[in-house]
Length: 461
Image 1 (tube, rainbow, N blue to C red):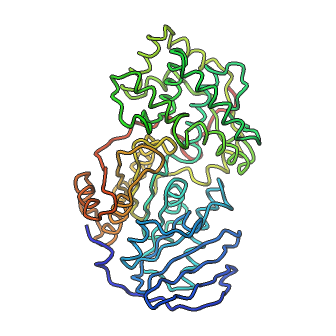
Image 2 (image 1 turned 180 degrees about the horizontal axis):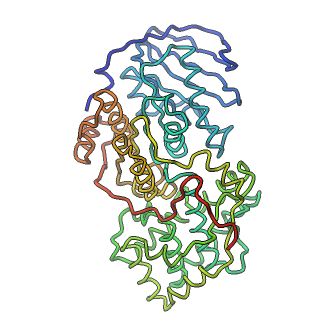
Image 3 (image 1 turned 135 degrees about the vertical axis):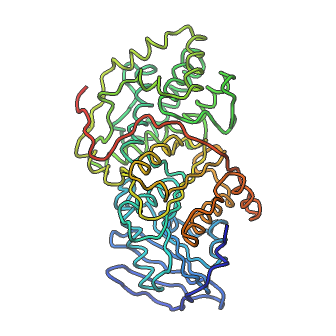
């Protein structure tokens, strides 16, 4: 695998002071304290989103654009490594766009244009990011296929905006039907008191976790939502240990930092405000079929828990299937789809890195992205790599660099060099001395809630 330092450095950024306006974008630059200090460019885009770029004194022509880079001033170790090798690194923030993902995608192109006006046209531009930033980076490849030369998408999910939130709806719907039959806790239409909604759900789930019946029903909801059976306390439970497996599901759902149910409240309220309605539905969904389509481990653990609790799994699934369904607002679906429901068409190489124990950007979504790309005939442009770790976007600096180097090597050579197997990736990570690598050979489960852009859906159950 080649490195940034092996590439020619074609640009040297000149340092100037003051501020300028380019195409309506306010730009400013900070003077360097010494000859080898980087140039820092800051400004605002047309929608008032701030952007920031750091350009090393001997810039090599490569620039990375990251959704969240301008949110702070600290340079993370993996970014510092790339800067040390001569690349420029910058980006925007999500503070203005929030869940208006389409606008965040467009902002990456506007920020790149501002960078080019100020510093010079890059020889290579790469969209990169984590979480929503990973989603936005992949969205750039679809929405603006000629603006960037490659994408490094990390822990972005990538089943699509509508798809991933339909699956999150399924999880909370099952919990609501079985643990809150009176409907006191929100599933959609999250109230302004988001913290209160979170705490109410945390309390309900903690109470359920204390009983065999509650644990069985928590496991069913987690399985339907394809949550990882991994938590901070139980990172890799054996599926034959039913209690540990369920406890790990509970950790991902409600017990760990940044729990799934918390995001299902706060982010859903935000996206409903952005889309002007509810973009999720479960009308027409067969939950018996969803359960049958789950992995063997998930099904067996749920079945054992129901047997231990003395409950009928079929009766509970029938209760869920018979519950009043949630219909979507078609206009909200259309607006949410724009940012982005992936169609699989790629014109530049994409590296997608996910960690298996991510409770927010669940790893099964990667199978849907791969399916869409393969159906479009562009699978030769995609490489997906997996890290064995727990928590949202839980990567070492070395893993972040190695994923980036995998893309850079593809851009250099014009083909995937074969250095994308777990052993080689871990060897490359170890050589960096930035925290090592935990890459594994992994095939995610089939995503259970696919949606294709423009596909009809039922409005009433």
